[in-house]
Length: 132
Image 1 (cartoon, one colour):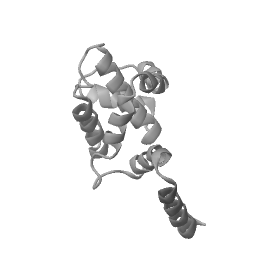
Image 2: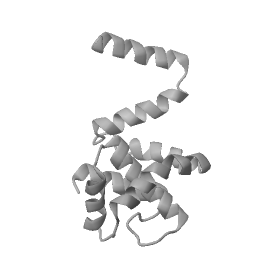
Image 3: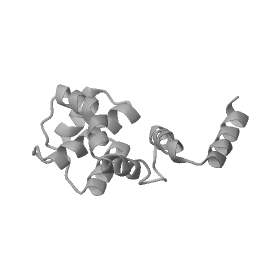
Image 4: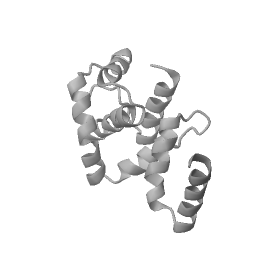
């Protein structure tokens, strides 16, 4: 596990208040694990096998199919537990100095939905002037 991956896992544990590497099937741990897997896979682009190795390195047995299942179900968990979205945003913004590009992009992608028109216009202008 590299430093960025370790910080993401620590942040998930801190924000959710559970140890994602604990051997349990409690709902709050399952949802926190799914959040971590979702971030690793969809934001960081890690393979299921790489995520599995992270768990094994922390003493948690995990099959890649279990990780696949949790990533697929995460959005449903978030739908029925809206606090997961808030917690995920806290994780994505937890350490600005070490946030990786994918974490920053995901944070912007999720938060732009809630910005007022003036801020969206400013962001649009910055992107348009610098990249088009």
